[in-house]
Length: 307
Image (cartoon, rainbow, N blue to C red; front, side, top):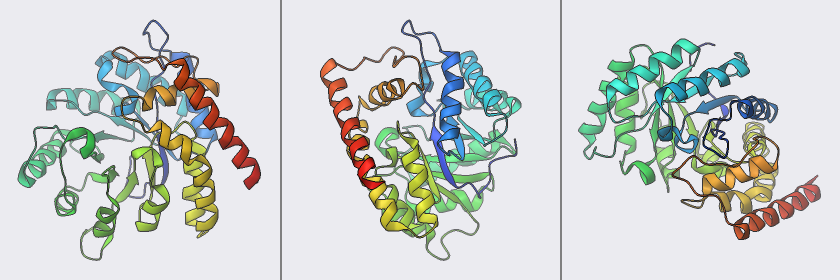
């Protein structure tokens, strides 16, 4: 697989990590999951992201999951691996392992201890030095990391570090950040901007100059269609498709419940065998499952009306 570049476009789906009810990794479900994501039109996959329960895996388990997914992908699309960790030794170890397995690049989120602009820039300068020639995705997710990165700071990182090829944009609100970064003269070289937050603002993000999405949703085909329609300037159809899925996307974005809802829906669709989260992580109540079922039924009805 060729390395990740600034030309990254489309939808890089954040893959979940399937587990058996007893907490073991469900390797077999990884195969079905990869097939499903690619069949829906994903242009890339991101493994071991925050919604992939990466902190709950050992380095050995992380490598096993990445190896299985890369084998199933078979070089058809680029695979990015999340390697965020408290220290550079862990980042370096996991990066070397996954790149040897065939990953296209890695993603790094900032540690919550960073406060000033200079601290943030210095951190990513050290990241780039640690990674060497490995291309990386800068993850900007202040609601989780607590680190506020202004467009000026992001531009400093991108302009100074050639191996930073993509921004995973997850600020909220963050539409103005995209506009500022896309303004003439802000960036001295190309940068792929792929957005997160479950695709909740995808139409607006595409309108501001994003190149697509790097996020998860139990119906990734929605994001694929929206990005494709925007590339064809069919904004009305894109918005109609988005609106049909929006109630479920909104429900899935609940803090603390989102991953459980996503896994329940994926299991319901037959993508993974179980909706299990590894501990700490609680299953959904029957009431919540019923609410998800109702939203899916309404979504299916709306899609039939559109078609």
